[in-house]
Image 1: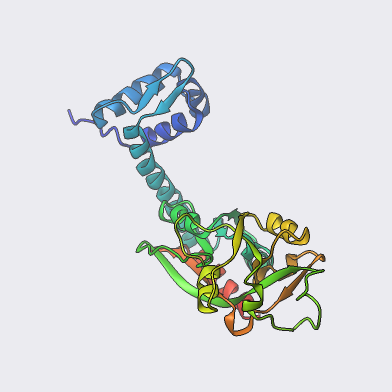
Image 2: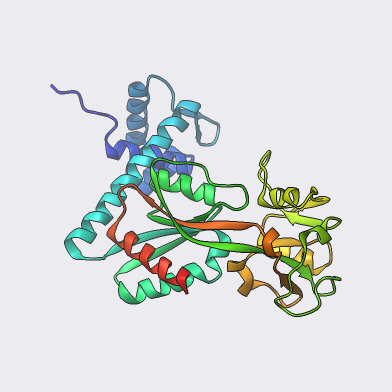
Length: 303
């Protein structure tokens, strides 16, 4: 009798459900199994894997290191199968199904919403699922099959190379400096350029990656100094609040300009201004709907 492959998709879905719920009983309820059936299937998986996949605790279970490794691969497989279903639906029935769209925070101010609005008008049968996160995290999620298209940038410290992701430059934009309205350099015409060297004594608000060199540090180095001090704040709303309170200044991508509150003033740094590249990211075998959205993003970026 042929031995059944215990790494079939049902077994992987069960592994994922137990990992997500932390309980054999809860996973059984989610998948409409009996608790004893879940225990048997997990035991079969563990026999196939060569050791325990879950630590049995007083209340529930948790993944062992081996379980974490297998769960990672299970998520990749399950996400790729879901993508295959969506791709087949698009091939056989036109643009239908779900499109999972990732974007970094400031791309969601105007660029991505405008493109999604145009996409929804043209393809009303495609359900859009937006996901926000840092660019590196979005690329990781795409590699694992959780995203169909993403908008990413090399700010603040570049993008990792990933051979499983197709990157295409969408636009290049200047980083502006945000000053509190009462700042000594905030007056004058809106297009007035600030010399970066005049900001050498300022406190900067940013959230650099540990051990990474940021665009701010590189720009200041070219201007002949190092940033005097930094306050580590990651979210844009927090950065804006700190600047408005006079606790420092920050760099703001031009894409975020429409969201800057009235208490702040944006100024160009002219030739010293850091610039970032905004790109679209697709998996190596993208859905047709993802290609269509990339074209609309390019149109929106051109405007």
